[in-house]
Length: 171
Picture 1 (spheres, helix red, strand yellow):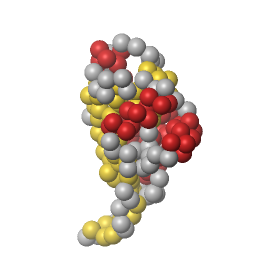
Picture 2 (tube, one colour):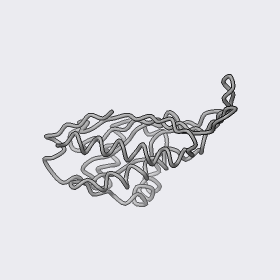
Picture 3 (spheres, one colour):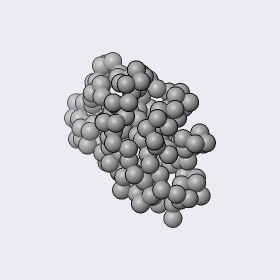
Picture 4 (spheres, one colour):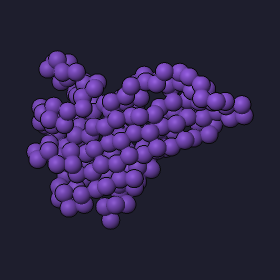
């Protein structure tokens, strides 16, 4: 589900910096007949890239080149992973010349298998924040269990659905 401040969002063209989402990989384990493991330590980066691609399809959003974010973080000696402070993220957005930033958390990015089926579970939340005011323009969360899918494919489908939902909320 996603919430959008329609007036704020449609008011202007947005130059958006999509930051890597926070992610702490799960430890592999077993729950009854299901065995699970993290599908990759870079889930936050993977989903941020997918969000950047999908958000760039919206009419009034231009995405800040993600390599610029990495470069600036390196220059400023900032710690991008684990950046949960909205204040720090807004400052980074200002340094990048962005009007808004996307940040969030990945709670699930796992592959699993049971006796008869394999699949993946992907869950995350995101916020689109106005750099000038610090106000949340849009926020949402999504979760998808996919049978016979790898986590990347599942995340890709989930992100497309989330951004479509966002677009539908604008009309």
